[in-house]
Amino acid sequence: MLDAKTIFVVSILSDTIFCLCGLLLWRAQPQVSGMLPLAMTFAARGLGLGVLVAGHAFSPFFGIWFGNLFLAVSVVLMLEGFARFLGQPAPRRLQIALVATVGISWPFLLWFRPEDVTLRMSIIALLGAVSYGYCALMFVRDTTLPVVLHRVTVTWWCVVSAVCAASGFVVWLVAPRGLFDANPFVGVYLLLHLLSFLVKGVMTAILVGVRLRGELLTRIDDERAQLLMLSHELRTPLAIVSRSSELLDEAKASADPSDARRVAQIRSAASRMSALVEQFLIRARHGSDHERTERFDLAEDIRSLAPSPRVVLDLPKQLTFTGDRKMMGIIFSNIVDNALKYSPPDSLVDVSLRASGGRMHLTVMDRGVGLGPDEDRMRLGEKFFRAPNARGTVGMGLGLYTVRKLVARHGGTITLSPREGGGAVATITCPGAAHGA
Image (cartoon, rainbow, N blue to C red; front, top):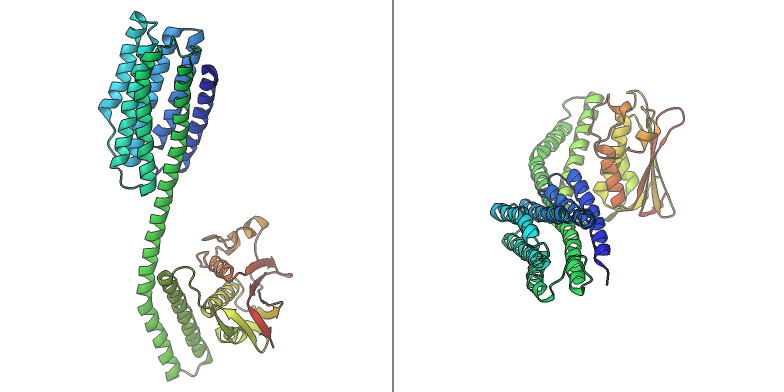
């Protein structure tokens, strides 16, 4: 069996590691209540063990007194941390009793009964049993944890409390002469304390992970609910815009080609937004695995979606594609809109479509502001990111992000490269192309 000094060294090292991990988590996730006192629990315990070891060699009286006082403080911090973590009031009377018992009574015990290690070990064990029992009570009151984890946690604290209480009575039967005594009971006693704190550190990490996961899922649900509400509310105004543009087109109120083109652009934009809203509502209703795949002529769809006379099309007569028709329309419209928006008003945007090896290759080339330096180019397609050379143009940094997500959902890729002579080239490749003619 490991000797006492080895167990102390291992305990101090493990406490240091858990303390550092807790402090890092406290800095990274400040919204998790109780992380700072829980991290300092391990710091106080490690410091207490270090003082006990050092005091054994230099000043046993002060080493035992302050070493046990730091151990009592570590239990106080543990109670404080878990109370904050669970959103419950801290047991102030128990915390004061722990510090007062060790801080006040220990000097008298060491002065009048310095050799009575049994009494001091039994008091520490019984104080630990009460503290761990209160931890079990706090977790019994909690209703936020998953059922299985709740049961495991409560059972664990009850077992630790029972073991501490049992060791407080057993110590009277073996009567050790000191913590560094070559007594098998002392080794088992210290080893159990080491294992209990190791398991407590791991369990704390699990509890924090479950809490963060729950908060993340709640946040996602809230955002999803807001998007559902927004999408539902957008349907009516979009329907009005779409119907009004249809009436304008049917009435042919103006023979001006530019007016007719603007009406067509309004209809196209309204149709695209309606498709996006419907797509989101369908996925929310049926889950993320629900996809509307069909066989359609992608070349014909691109011809009908071309939003401007500035778009020069190089398309096959027909290209049969299997996928989500509305999604492909959104992909094409977003990538072409970006090319038009970031290009001079009189420049052309070249669009070509090809099929090879069962894959579709859509290429969009412009003479716009380009992709910027390499460090910005690597971030293109991130949510809300806009390169410095594009900030003079109105936008939110979501168009290319949307394209990347929808292309990935089709199992495809999008690559961006600078165009010789200025501008950018976007190439979208997706599986599902049957043939082109």
